[in-house]
Length: 493
Image 1 (spheres, rainbow, N blue to C red):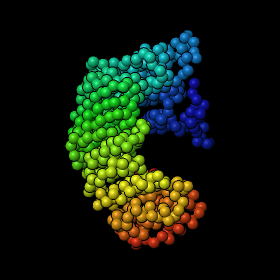
Image 2: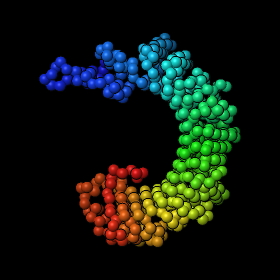
Image 3: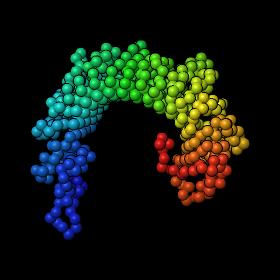
Image 4: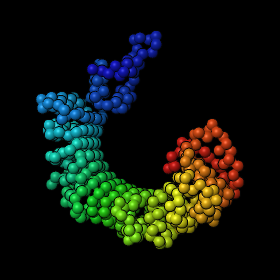
């Protein structure tokens, strides 16, 4: 049955012209594009409108199937009937296409029950026979029995494969995906080393790999990621003990989310973008990263009880990671990372190529000590031109205006402000005075400033020009400096 609102939209008529169906008069390509934004079940309903709409529906390049039911509340007979209806509907979507190419097949099942095993395998087999290029499988639920999907690992048509099942990564003995370029595994329990090697070797054209896992086993594992054409790698280890070796001469982008006990060895001489979030574990760069352009560092503390030895170890690991990024041009470093580096008690390396620095700062009475890292960081970057500050201060911690002024003077010495050409500062309701102090100091000492942008929660200022006028009244050391107010900006532009 066609949804009434959809039917109303499809049969929209211009007032005074009852016989003209304007929507159906559109070209097929435009109608297909419109229908591609609808869920598959609703798009299928358009096929009853006319023969033309039926032909349009079965020629859609993508199929998105969702089965989300409270299976355990159904009787066995009702469950079988629902599974049968789901399977029939899915088969019709694929078989009625009359050899029209299938670009993407997306299947979401929540929760998984044993009754669905044959249905899922049958639908995936049908999609593979239709030479699907992009396959996205998400199966949620408590699965005591493994959802084994060997057929998808021997497809010549697949270009993109995404699997989210919450199981161990155990690939079949034979893997042959000659055209696969993008491979994503989400919510894995663990990764079997032998299976992983077989999997990578069976994907000779792989360019993008994403692995997200949480290993609860208290065992040491080794994982070698080596693919000749790999350009993008995302690794997210939420738990477990792994030794990871990454090797690729073509790797450009590396994103690491680490909350397990890991050791990294990275051999990627052409790496340009590096993002690291999580515990400061041991990271070794086999070759100097001379091509690195942009890096984001966001350390978190170990959940273990902090001792002096643990703090020193974290600091050493953090320092060695920063030391491997000496050639970086743009660096984003968060407040906890400054604290971790401070605990190392070592001098930062020279960052002579660094021209853009983003600091995510948290300021309270306890953080003022490791704010001493800020001038060290500025000193290590003699060619810095752009500074982006995301400030956050708790008003009940630093209420003394004189104390705040001294803190900013020590953190941002005038000798390092003079060289800056562009500054961005986030100002929101709870750190407004802190933001004003920053703006005032930078305007007063920024002799080379061309532009200072204020962003954040500024919308309320439109009804209160007092804050605008206050900032515009600050003394400017650079007459060429423009002050820009942008409450739509997110800080990453």
